[in-house]
Length: 117
Image 1 (tube, rainbow, N blue to C red):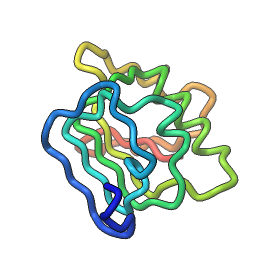
Image 2: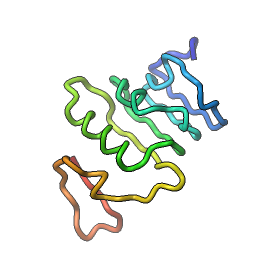
Image 3: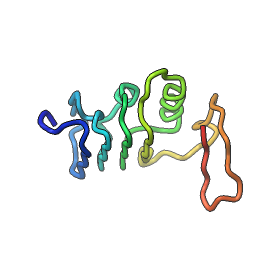
Image 4: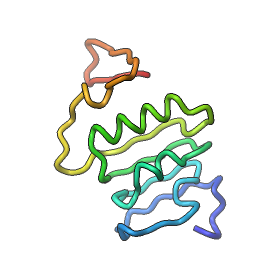
């Protein structure tokens, strides 16, 4: 990661130790991690000026995601354009917990549920 320019795309499919840290880990314009269980809420809040982050597995539940979303919405700096993540394996999706204290627009009649902030 020290030698890859952050303007590039980074995709890592292998396992990553839970104690992994690197200053560039979430700075690539496009970042995809199969295992994102090492990423903390503070790591997410530190993201600035990236395009897309995809995390196939995480340690986050609905409350964590809501906390991040509220931070993202209120952040005065550009953080990211798109975040795609799966919740921790045993998490139950609670829409009310995800959208608590957020103004959302819900699209009725779509083939899947979308919420826009």
